[in-house]
Image 1 (tube, helix red, strand yellow):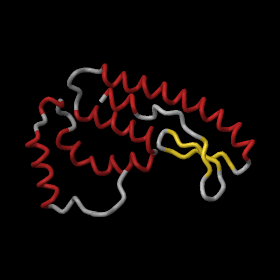
Image 2: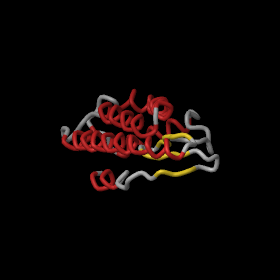
Image 3: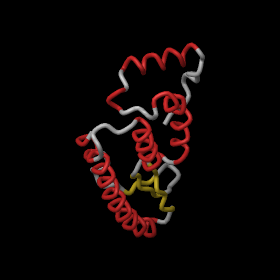
Image 4: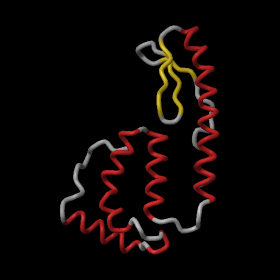
Length: 143
């Protein structure tokens, strides 16, 4: 996880212009729109770079905290960390999507330590969900 995490968002966000003539900069999986005036957009771009630098530092600290945590956290603790990471990267809608779809798994395994959940448990859950037609929506956009 550490190598992948360090590589993400490693390049400095660039000021761009979209097809509608709006200046924007993308970082943290989000577009930050700066308006259509070039001079104003360039000034706002400098502020966005500072915000990106702060965000990147906070993100590195959060990743380090997660890696330094106890060796075998509970499934519930991992779920909470995952939702926080999704909210930081993609926003609240994505967090709600994952919370909704992971609820049943948490009811079954939330209190378990990660060392006690085996692949067979996950396969059994998947089969149960397929038989009860809980898994639906092929082709829908997911986070």
